[in-house]
Image (tube, rainbow, N blue to C red):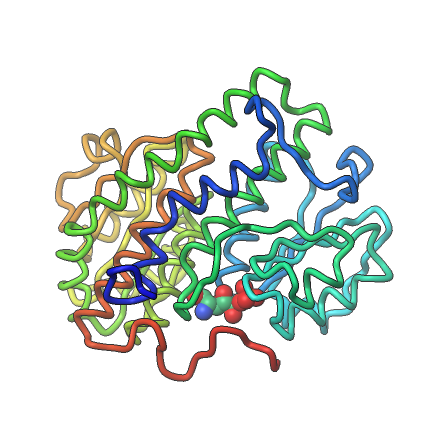
Length: 364
Ligand code: M6R
């Protein structure tokens, strides 16, 4: 049942405020000042290193989480794609917690990477959508993301629910490791509580995203740029777009632009820049100006303050509500999804069942 939407993907994009609210209800204590985790989860005080492993969109959730765990919980994090990790023979010591993220819980490479760690790591944790899946069953602790069934091959609500659970886990780790006092935690949790309402505002920008997407649909190649927490989001935006519109898209950390990809810039290749007005904004904007100086056509996804400061000369803008820096990835996932969705519609491709792809990749 598509619930009145044309595609499952549109339905699942629209469901995000609700399912994130469900995840918050599950993980936050009744008074809203604490985070409930299963007793089997180890105390992060004794953890030396966290290893995050996944494939595809779930991997981009892991890359985002690396920034959170390192910055907020001061915990060293390694992040890798499951198909690389499993054959690298990486040393995994008993001070390591190995964490696997998977919507289906059946991805072959992720499961094999989990099995590689099972007898080496101190503890195996998974963040999954399907609670009875192999990955959930074989983990010491399985944390559900509570996104509900996701039908569209392009992952949308599972991604933002993965981000929500990983962020809560980073906060829990920060609290246990003495890097977040009770007041700071309460502030962060109340900001998180208001996120579903804010996501509704982002969803309401759908028509603007559709207009931009009509132009993107004419391109053969599209570049996505972001820095810090927006770098994994740029990768997610590019993946979503190529999966369902079949347009070649690539993402770069904006600081990498002058190390090669700037040679590609011309007026025929649209560049999508994801940049809320955070501490790295000015750096990203100077990269964006280098693109525009070479005739590149920029779509800037930012907030009001970012628009005021850097909107001049930009071809298209999508303006997001203002949120605390650490919550921006969950919010900016929405325009990334909307752009991919409407570009695919403009191209007439099969949005829910893109060619060559399966929802669950159970062979390597
Ligand atoms: O079920 P999983 O989360 O383990 O799947 C991982 C990837 O196959 C998946 O995220 C894939 O990249 C999606 N089609 C992305 O939209």
